Image 1 (cartoon, rainbow, N blue to C red):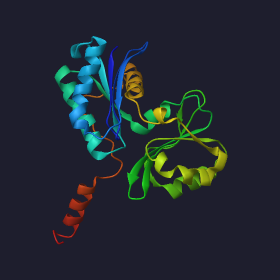
Image 2: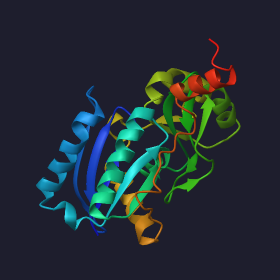
Image 3: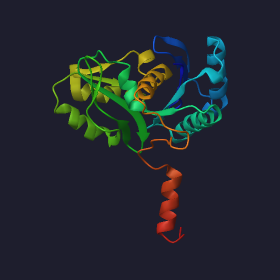
Image 4: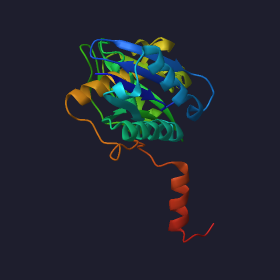
Length: 237
């Protein structure tokens, strides 16, 4: 099976092609350029470099959230369009689970953190050592609440994700030697992992149609909150 992986949930734009046996190709960029400009050219380059035609794909996996509202929409809409055009099954993969799945041998808690702004981080907890086991749902929490939860635990904690750099010293101050950090190149979400998780979903017959795939936002976008507030106030400013 050839599975295309897509991740545009954060500043990183990543595209990969995997089979059951190997990672065939992967392009990952972390530069300030809109995902809408670079995603389709990256997909074309990955397929061309691998010598694979779009019609030879067996499925598409996309990081469906949480993450940037705009980034998620771009990735999911692209996956839906390709899925419809090529009649392929799709998989929406948790961005947080993909981050954790890149560190299956870490013997302790794996704590992916994405910047959710408004004083919160997107987070879930996983336990590693021999694969990963999910311990919480994906959620938006304040850093203080997350640290209070982690403080009650005894295990070392591996922090990954774009919010780690923002709060690194606070994490060290709260947990001391229990706070562990991945190298920068392995702390970002990679489409290869998204594709690998999608491959497992498709093998288990858990794929979705293009009509059913939706982003996993956790919170409503700012524009939606403002619209709701306007409606609740009867249109008054």
